[in-house]
Length: 342
Image (cartoon, rainbow, N blue to C red; front, top):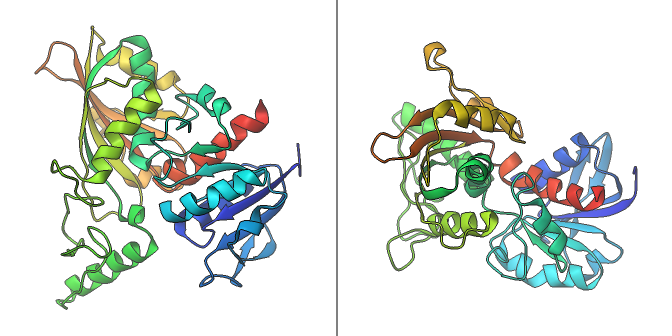
């Protein structure tokens, strides 16, 4: 399979784009040519990968001539403008933005959960929201055993989900706070917000903008995407998404109500056998997943598995994963692998 596919990464200088390059090389993805694309601001930068230097090129519609796979990670506006151009030139687009996720004609894919959906694509496949990915990887094996009745999620999301500038701001503000210096927040809850807040030594219960009913967009994404990926359009799901002062690795407290009995031992066994899941769940040894476990790994870590005594059939789970890898770069590349391995 070596050297069969021409690949481009759109948004190659961003955190996810950089990680995509790393993961392509790690997983020995069979690319013949790799082209790195970004805005005119980042064009002509040099990126070293796998012992080779690549020049970042400015993104244009002509960039996709002869391309087999185009991985997009440059924001929804760029995807909406250029993904159709890539498809028209024969590429399969795997898009990491929110542009196409809820389009009924576009599959929304997590390879451990709904791999067959990838094969129905018409040129574009959407990569889900990072928090949704790790949650559905943990939910799917349980739902297959006993159908899920309701899901309640509360997230603890790392600042890397807001981009490199937000990571830099957190680190700068942490140093400033320790030294008693003033800070000027600009990136949290998001750039251009009416008010911005310091994340250092703080948590902020908003990710993305608010919509009319008081939910923020990140919460709406988790609700809608979970239903679509799991093929359960009526599944009751609710979420509260929170930004925490962690650089990398999202955590989610997931409360699951089932339609019938599923005890903790059965749940552990199911999850231990599930693809992409690692169990860390030994209260006696104080063993449970934390963002530091997930850093630079592709697994979804699950622990704190315990009975919810407030409902007839319920479990609580603690789910942790690297949001830049499994939540973005790795999941995208796994989708392409589904297509080439078929």
